[in-house]
Amino acid sequence: MRSPSKLATFHATRSTVPRCAVGVESWFQNDRGIRALSVLCLFALAACVATPSAPAKVADYRGRIGVLCPEQVSPRVPAQAERDKISGKVVADARVVEGAVVDVRIRSGPRVYRNAVVEAMKQYRCDRDVPRAVTNQQFVFDMSRQPIAPLKAAK
Image 1: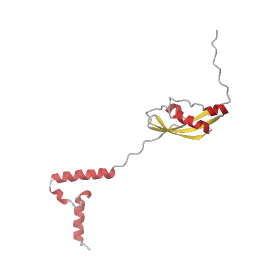
Image 2: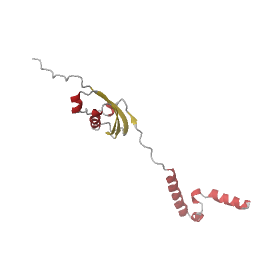
Image 3: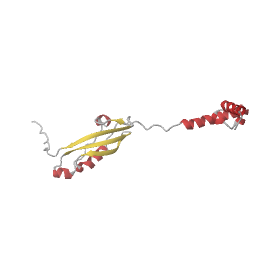
Image 4: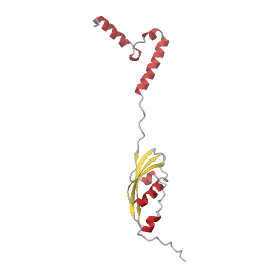
């Protein structure tokens, strides 16, 4: 066991030397050593304190896709759906990164329309000022309606 006088000396020495410099008291002999040691301590401190940057916040534009993506493409009606008169509503979620739709997930709707919806949404042009966003959209396919005849010009 150490004597009280040696413990007091040890604590006094440690308290006067920065924590990162314990054991290198010889560097304190001149100013150059002090500067070099302080630079090393600063780098060590910066490495300890540095944390990875937080991921970019994802903006929620659900229900407001027209605001986020003003340039939209209509999905093409598949031939099978037209032939079999398949109607339905497709609900899709989209993930937008830097103005482009990068991922589309279909939540519900007839399978025959799913690929057409995904292809159309991937062609959307969205606001580039929003780095990351999520949004959703509903597509209603009603095959029971008759096509509208073109208007005839009045004479």
